Image 1 (cartoon, helix red, strand yellow):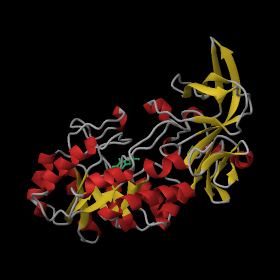
Image 2 (spheres, rainbow, N blue to C red):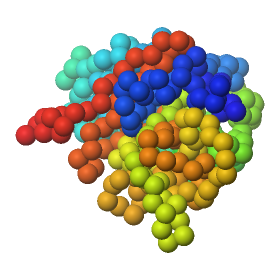
Image 3 (cartoon, rainbow, N blue to C red):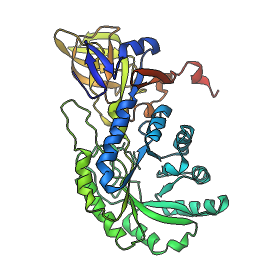
Image 4 (cartoon, rainbow, N blue to C red):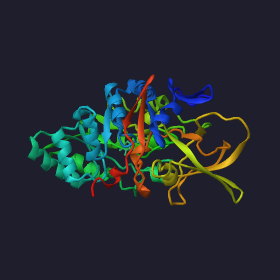
Length: 410
Ligand SMILES: *Cc1c(COP(=O)(O)O)cnc(C)c1O
């Protein structure tokens, strides 16, 4: 069985590219994140190819996966980066990327973060409110007086068809500025002499199941920019969807590219994809600790939890779960749960799985995006190891946290 170009069973063992995952986790233990650089590069290439006719520049959304080796690999193939905090800018710079390839976004940038971004020389700041513009203007003066290139984030007042926690473009959302506010700014660009407003930005949400909301929002954006022809760049954010279920299909990126192409004639396009580049390039491996059969249920307790992968608990997200070794025999309806003291700590409800026994390892698929970046130390659980695979090589990219890491700052 083949899950994607990197993850498949060979001789009944789950492989990542040329390697046997069981062999890797035998050395590094569980829970463990495993990422395939080959799939990350392939996904990036697929998007750059799809959007090439639009002259698009891709900024990988670091909040999806901030692993340094992942950032290095993407930088090496020409990606820019979309950062939403000073910490993400720091990580991208540590990975060796150029500051000018960074877009700094975020609904509540502190003055310290803005100062750090401006001093570092980031390529763009996506501003989300008027107060922020005043800060940027003043901080630019304090630094070297050079104008800072700014995009204004439009709240297009369009509701994306996605999970409510992933929608960011409706009018009541905290994100961006409404069109009338932006118009006020574009009428008086001289009010901020050290800011060069050069782009309108929008990001209406994640995991957008169709392109309708994007196109509706783009109409509003274009209605705005047509009155200000000196705006030559449009940033459409991220949100390209990913298939999380075996039988799921999502619109291909070329479909969106085609729908955009005639609308965006004459503009430079920026995009900020996150999940579409890394989600299916990663999985989380866990070991079965206990099997309980009670109240008519089969409950399998694994050593991964919502602390390592919060998406099921936070969004009701679905991750396919498969055994590392293909097993014969009947399947049974199984509740895959974590050890954390929360009823929401269920990683897979009602899954048809072979009869797992303690020691059997499973993989939670499509966990390369918003997995480790959302991991926490809840229940004082050390965060898991991150393994990176490049062809037939693998290495520990970030070691498993230890007990002493848990008291590092005390
Ligand atoms: C989260 C986010 C993205 C990336 O979203 P994906 O769904 O992972 O592509 C892009 N831009 C902004 C502003 C974001 O907040």
